[in-house]
Image 1 (cartoon, rainbow, N blue to C red):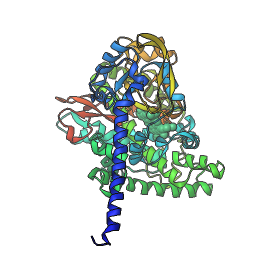
Image 2: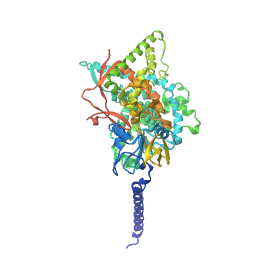
Image 3: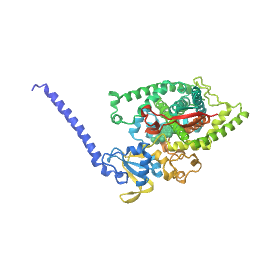
Image 4: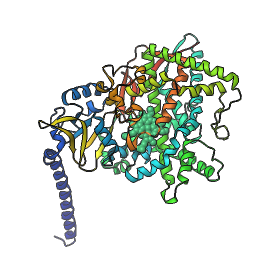
Length: 571
Ligand code: HEM
């Protein structure tokens, strides 16, 4: 053999050996995962639904069309805390409806959002606070929180009403155009998506996208294109990409290209906002500005320079607010209107409450005619939308926040149709979770569950919101009056914001809670004051969950999220 061949042979041998070692390591990992580790998993000992070796219970745990039935069956058979199978018997996961356990999981530093969830989210909305854990999360939360205070929300609330009025004017003109009929059908999911996008544009960045008026508004279209890719659900390719993110660069999928391009368009506009706001805040000219980004920049500048967020961090927060903030609110409004349309008696009662409030506000206008809007937005030339609100309207907007029946309607809608169906945490070390109700482990009762590092825990947000043991036998019914006297089981240490699981709990609980509550109330009160809503003929609405639980028309899956409702102008 020629001598020059030897180095090649040696290289081929070394390469072959390296491949064998990698394969062997993979094989050992797999055998350990499937055979050796499961018997030592303490979750294997606690009761839960039966399943074959590779059977998965994800469908029952995460599909909102299936989960109410599955949760009821699992709780009946195993109690409030049980295990279920993720990808198979080797992947036991914990699900709990036990308040003590939930409070522990949400507040202990042992539990984090799994890196898989954070990586999946950050691909869509950047590395904002949603994807952060530990010290970085704490720092970001400290800087962001002042921008969501009650006072900050009050400052931006006139915008909610302006955009709701604009939406109603558009529907009004559509009713006028359809001269033959008093009823028209509108896809409220489509219109609320535009409304909340414009609201977050103005309240978040003092910028009017005006996607309500301009259906071709490029940033809203980029945002919709990106979220449309989500409707396809998480497929095998998404899972492979999570573990091998390099694939996204060397062999990007069509959806991957859409997401990347859309995010770039959104980030470009976000970067412009940051540069403008920073310049404003730094020269003190913009110190009166009340948009979230200006408050965030002010809060950031008030910190020691070593503790401040970088411009890239600020940009990631912009995409987070724009995408996460507007989408969840619009979905919540759509579900609330779906419930009102399917419960005409409740809609009538809500309308009556609104009428009383409007009358009272009109009376106040008589002696309050000089009152003006003090939101601070009118003074900025870039604020393109009409900002002034007449005094009667201003006092109505204020009254909206304290209407008890409206409050019950909104809470009840968020209870029955929480936009976030469930959330997952992973144990970063071995732990023992305390329970308020004992469970049987190997025939003995215990008041805690042992959990090993790496185990996943599912918090069934929708399940807890609709649990009969907490809310009573009518838990699945839409009953706004229940909020005037909550059952003891709910008032006793419920681990959620506003006695709901819908906004999470603990250090990761929703920062936009007050913002979105005020926004949903204002938009609902406005549209119900001007239109009557009823279900569209021959349409069945289904739920689909991928990050957010959206409405779909049965049989029209390909058309994306839709909620068609009949609207009729009120006299
Ligand atoms: C109906 C509307 C909304 C719902 C149902 C909702 C729900 C939630 C939930 C469940 C979480 C916690 C997730 C977890 O722990 O796994 C969360 C976090 C968060 N939400 Fe909301 N949200 C809504 C609206 C908003 C709005 C309008 C904003 C901002 C404009 C916002 C900003 C945030 C932020 C920044 C976090 C992350 C907090 C952290 O990790 O520290 N949300 N939201």
